Length: 385
Image 1 (cartoon, helix red, strand yellow):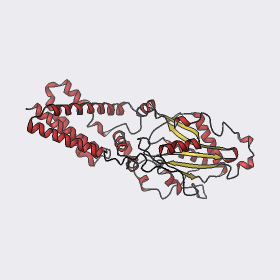
Image 2 (image 1 turned 90 degrees about the horizontal axis):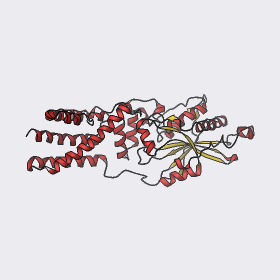
Image 3 (image 1 turned 60 degrees about the vertical axis):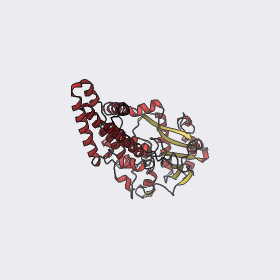
Image 4 (image 1 turned 135 degrees about the vertical axis):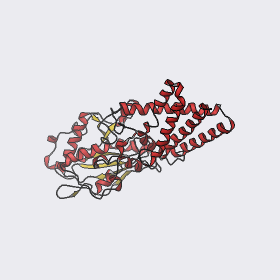
């Protein structure tokens, strides 16, 4: 997206209100305001979809999309994990914006907003002000992203609260419930979010924090504004860009569940031959690989919990099973290694038993922990021989 954004505002930088006949500006068709809903994609940051505002002024030959974005380059990804991501509104010519998503194979549906001429002028002014601020908003995937910012600027333009009714059932749960629902066709993206999203994702959030892009049009179609209970969206949405079939779909059989089930079966098979046939080289190679992977994940999760300010990272249940303490004790206490292994094995077994009680714990992660437990048991057997 970054490549097609303009460095100037669409309205304030090209046309002043004083240059236009006031009577013309008060006509309902002078400005057309729409919500654009973009279908999801397989990238972890795209499984929720995306949304933007489209503002048109035909008499001035102006047609722009306004999108709330954050950087997704390498530096942006690092800042995301650190919790230092900044986001902001930026304009893009509508033909370029639509073409960008058409090339990605993602669909776009347009919903015309039922706003008065004054409200649409105010909306354009507010968005222009936001563009002038640049990327200055703290960006968070739960509370401050494209959907919440669009709801915010529309609310400000309306100068009244949007009244919701007949909300989808998904909006009655937690943010994790929304994530699980949104990632149904993207199991690896779900695995990622389950890994980094701690207990904060299980809290029941206010509605404004749960209107993900996929559900915003659904909620707004039945929403009303003002004392006259005016519908916020005029008509059913119009598909203006058709998505490709199975866009980025992850209906691939090689899902996390499949991969880590195969891992557990492989570990069990290797352990069986180590026990019955006395195999040494392959089991120790497996242990070395698991140790390296466990150490990398442990250091990442430890850093995330201790140093990141990103939403949902103040605590992470996977830190119980993936932390550097067992390795540290193994190195520092060589005479107590068997007890280090036994204690850590007990922790892992208890952790597996907590799966039914902690929403963050899902089956693919538990299969990984089970594989570690099997090899840890074999390590204890090897030491005590």
